[in-house]
Image (cartoon, rainbow, N blue to C red):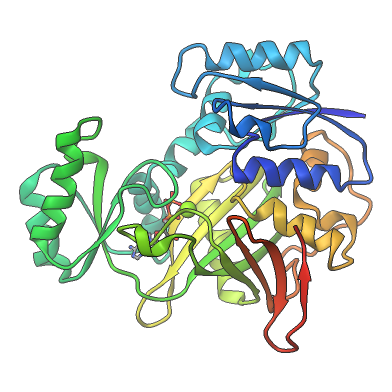
Amino acid sequence: MTRVLVTGAGGLAGVNFVRALRASSKEYYIAGTDYNKYHILYPDVDARYLTPRHSDRTFITRVAEIARKERVDFLHPQPSSEAYVVSAKREKVPCRVFLPPASVMRVGQDKLLSEKRLKADGIPVAKTVPIAGKADIRAAFSKLGKPLWARARHGAGGRLSLLCADPEEARLWIELWVKRGGVGYDEFIIQEYLPGRNVAWDSIWKDGKLVTSYSRERLEYPFRHISPSGITGTPSVSRTIHDPRLNEVGQRGVRAIDPNPNGAYSVDVKESADGTPCITEVDSGKFHSTMPLWGYIAVKHLGMPEYANLADLYVRLGMGEDLRDAPPKTDLLPDGYYLLRDMDVGAYLWREDDGSKQKVL
Ligand SMILES: Nc1ncnc2c1ncn2[C@@H]1O[C@H](COP(=O)(O)OP(=O)(O)O)[C@@H](O)[C@H]1O
Ligand SMILES: [Mg+2]
């Protein structure tokens, strides 16, 4: 039996990750942590613990203490913020992890640094203006036209993003957050607005080699009508797609951020007006929220081999296990499946071509 500790286990991604491990033929003992006393009740874990937030000095010692007490073999820190702290303090953790080095994650978690790195490698990205003060906001519009997309350099879920019609809107938006404290002008970048398809390319790598990947298009976000940007983090409607351009740009994007990829890498792509796939983010060491859920669906509802259970595959690789069958490197999942999910409605797998529908959660 492999003993696993999942941090952020009460978040959507954490709950999906734990559920997927439970669907494995392998028996897992799973302990989970969260900082939220309500959310920690959600995952199907054998033991649950509260921890401080990742920004608290005692976070890593608490996680290490739990790992020791639970005799954990493998630690999966699900939220990017926690994964970064674990990678940076790797020597404190008494078990295996499957994470890129903190130097890589630092670039992946800063949208300005990653934009520069990707651009230097000739990978399509949105034209970007870094903001240091008020004057740069006006300059961004003179340079790039309008409308433009304002966003934070750090964080997830479309943090502090807004489509701004003109420099005045961008200034009011940015200054509201600066006035509230906690961020400076330099936490913002202003980018060319990419109006095309919103796509995710999710992948698992081992020792610099791509193990498997799949692409999906995000079609709707929950509660989008009550959010200023319409981006609320994880989609309520998405569909699997096959597109060789995404397989190429995804791999190039990961390699640009990490020359020796190891673990999970989630790449976000938004298409420009002429349909060019531009990378907006390379989240290194990260499972997108629905990545473990798609893997769960693959083995439970699509009859796929066990390697398609991405959470299980990731833990096995992280534990140094050799795979019996190698999954396809790209387009792991068949295309044309829609995942429909929302608060209180459960989750459904649907096909538009034949109208078939299955309840998956
Ligand atoms: N330049 C842009 N133009 C239009 N939409 C964007 C742009 N950059 C990001 N987005 C939107 O914001 C979403 C979240 O951005 P992403 O790069 O994934 O960062 P994070 O997930 O860390 O918030 C993207 O999926 C995309 O829909
Ligand atoms: Mg993202």
